[in-house]
Amino acid sequence: MSFNEWKINKLIDLSEKIGSGATPRGGSNVYLEEGIPFIRSQNVYNCEFQEVGLVYIDEESAEKLKNVNLSKGDVILNITGDSVARCTILPEKYIGGRVNQHVAIIRTNKKKLNPQFLKYFLVSSSMQAHMLSLAQMGATRAALTKGMIESFEIPTPSIKEQEEIANILSTLDDKIEVNKQICKSLENMAQAIFKQWFVDFEFPNKDGEPYKSSGGEMIESELGMIPKGWGVEEIENISDIQNGFAFKAPEYVDEGIKVLRTLNIGNDGYFNNTDIVFLPQSYKSEKYEKYYFEEFDVALVMVGASIGKIGMILKNTAGGLQNQNMWRFRRKEKRVSQIFIYYTVKQAQNISKNWSTGSARDFYRKDSFRKIKVILPEKRFMDLFEKITKPIFQNISNHACENDELISMRDGLLPKLMSGEIRVPLDEEGDVS
Image (cartoon, rainbow, N blue to C red; front, top):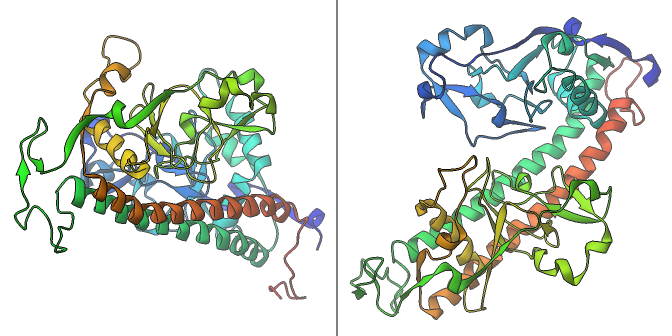
């Protein structure tokens, strides 16, 4: 059977349910830290579910939304706002949850349409472009209506071929997720060392025992008691703080030098190549030299909706240009570990109260932020921390590069599998051979 013989069906004829949710009365005031999962558009990315920002509601609020109860295999699609058209499959751990009005549930008839196949069809470049075009037809805000979704035309090979196509693509996604979990575990390890040594002061003494709890000598400082021989420094004395540059969108090109914007900081704390834009090679000049990111540079968003978000540059994004709305932190001298700078900026951001409340946009004041004081350990402990943690982050960096390759492979295969250009071999009875 050729692709031309694949049937084209409207999504409504392949689905058991298509509908969006609502926000419980009281809005964010009723959100809880545990209870019934309540999924919003910030949790839904293409082929990915982000737990960051996930909230919960109580049984009473959930009962009022029982018509949008989430089931195994549900496809969830963002239908309004800047994230419109993002789509993924509901993780099984959130079965029984609810969605708000910005997210649609698509529950397929599994005898006709494989949910994973549908997900991959919806995230394909051609379908993303189609949905974004439809969404822009709204009056004021990008939106996909229920009628639009119901009318989506879906190519439907046999259910067995759908399943095999989905399996091929999901194998790549599964490997991507494994790499992400490895990176998360590795960073948790490095962060635990930072806290143990430089917050709790339980670094190993000369006998290999935890310093503070073993009676290590502590002295007074302006930040409280610290180990003898340690000091206090302002952030600007250990790290160069560089503003970004306001590169102009009309100059963006299809290929060239990457421009890293605030939206390229993922919820995992690393810059990524999603929705990347480029500038011509002419920007590779001395004029812009100071805006080039290096591996393990740290950036802090200092204004706008993402204010306070921190990202680290890994190997896959090194060499990109630093756009506006963020500061870049890079150690001033080699005696300071760049990994130490990363966690120090995180600490400084957590304790900083330098918000502006008198203008239309919140922002950090650089003059105040750079004066934040941090505890600086003795050089031998800084060197040991660098020796232990740098290989950890190099490993994270390598996994990020591997994921870029896997994503590129998946995104290259996806349209060819979905169009029938690459076919899954089937036997005469329609089974995978």
